[in-house]
Image (cartoon, rainbow, N blue to C red; front, side):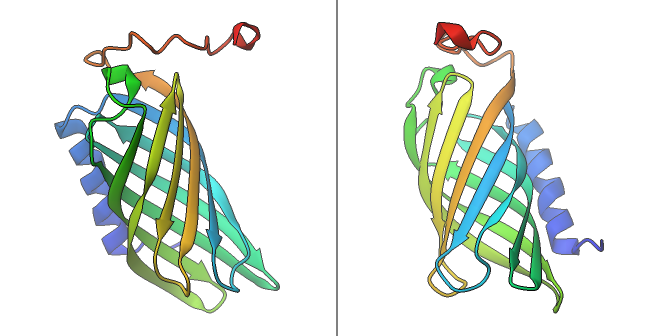
Length: 173
């Protein structure tokens, strides 16, 4: 698989920004994309991200199939929260965000890359994050849903509300 130089630059930039701005929440999860057009039907994949109360940067990979055409997308994104976010920082659990996503698409017809704006809402509860957003383009746009689990909370995060659900004891929910 050949990497696009713009995607690689965006990936390195997001990781550097995460370290420079003291990102405190590291998460891994699944993402689902549903284009509001004919092709492709659904895209499903994984993503890893780093966030703090002001931004969220992530790298992911999604795959899908439409008839005989297979789709692969490498994604890199950065979202900026309009208000301080995440209850681990003793901030809002639900906030709107705006951001940009770069997609390096690979199909049987070739490879191309595109930047797409994003907007939506993020919800946090204990170690879980739900993100539901919209990306214009590709016909009528794309619904993007991400569900992730925070596997590491940084030392500077005030995680006073992070023990609502014990991650290994789901019977106490």
